[in-house]
Length: 169
Image 1 (cartoon, one colour):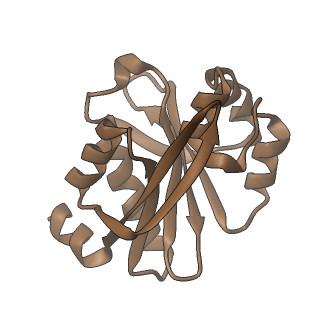
Image 2 (tube, one colour):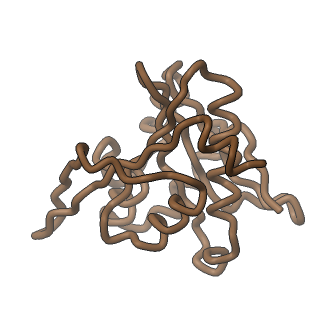
């Protein structure tokens, strides 16, 4: 179905071409990047030893269908910048598979018991996907981002290693 492969700077132009506007960039990456997304911003992430960048590849045809990152924090690892860019590929279970593969990678490679992510509260499809994998909303953590005349509320979701391992078996 899909697999995670290392993202390199050679993959940057394809990712950049998929980010059509400031709203899409904020949804995809949170407030850390600025529009337009550039190779330099991605190079900065690639040289950050706390970040692992992936391209999401469709095994059937070898085409890149998305992007994801893991950010190593002090107590946890954060899944983020997850994007399946063709809307025709959404709703096919790719998101769940990507999350499972990111979690497997994170728990295998980092000595952490908890993984987390942030998602805007209006992104109900993503929230449901994350719940299916075993994530739960942490009601103590909320952030806000402003775009145009709107305020977007970001929810934090967490999953414990044991919960993931039970879900996997």
